[in-house]
Length: 166
Image (cartoon, rainbow, N blue to C red):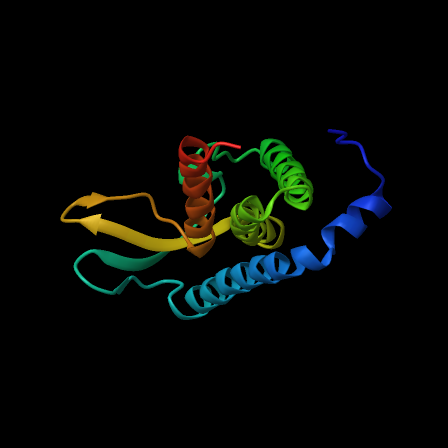
């Protein structure tokens, strides 16, 4: 399989008829993430909103990657991580274009969420996380809607690799 293609061929592959549904799905995920973050930033910026005994909405700004890993005050490291994330997203979009339908669904789920968080890294220099799952005093890592879709995509990818053989 040849991974080196021209930009024109990449664009042609990306916008094939068979990819349009998955691109729309990816865009819906991106905008769902944007809408939830917009709502939380504008309505719950300073307050914790108690949904029930297990879920709170509590806005925190994550300057790291998943679960706050690689959080740093160094703008050089932050920018390098952001560039690396951009490269990974581009690679996933490329793999999406050459994949079968099941994999296109998986990659569009992951990329839709990743683009939401990537947008925040560029626009805000941090990712707003706000879903706080907890039981009594045990709190899971705070996350957002994009993280939910990334996690779902990765879990489906892992399950698929265990149960479906090519």
